[in-house]
Image: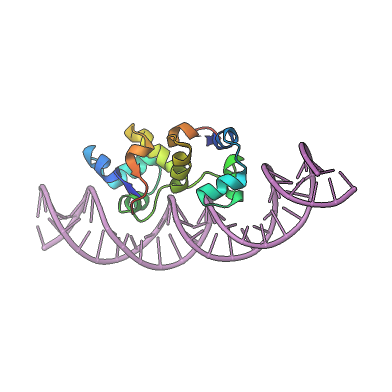
Length: 65
Length: 65
DNA sequence: TAGGTATGTCAAGCAAGCTTTACATACGGA
DNA sequence: TCCGTATGTAAAGCTTGCTTGACATACCTA
């Protein structure tokens, strides 16, 4: 599952810690999602999409690694 | 997290077992999602959306129970 | 050089998603 | 009535998502 979280975060000048705080998760969770260690839960995916004002489908791409 | 899985499945005349098979999960998993016991993982949510040819956002509504 | 910020990663532990097996109930048709 | 199908639910167990705490590295700046 590819995702654009790192790219979207970078565009906004946020650190992983900044994003983690906005999403109410730990910095390690943000890092793990960005580095592809695991996929977020569906509720977290919704929070990410809402924060970036995008659809889940435009941020996460299934099928890939 | 509300969802329209039961409604979409019903429209197609599929049993929970039929849907489970198409999604490659157990019948109990389909039942648990329909009855709101827990949310699907993000990969499974993508499979559901693809099967019904809809967006994740139009099938699942966060915020509610 | 020393200190601060950002990132990567690991380990241990708890919570959530999913599995198999099993049993109960309800309904419709032969 | 009996049988097959559909659904709900429960227990035990494995895997994945997420936590806290800790440590390492890199870079930038005073």
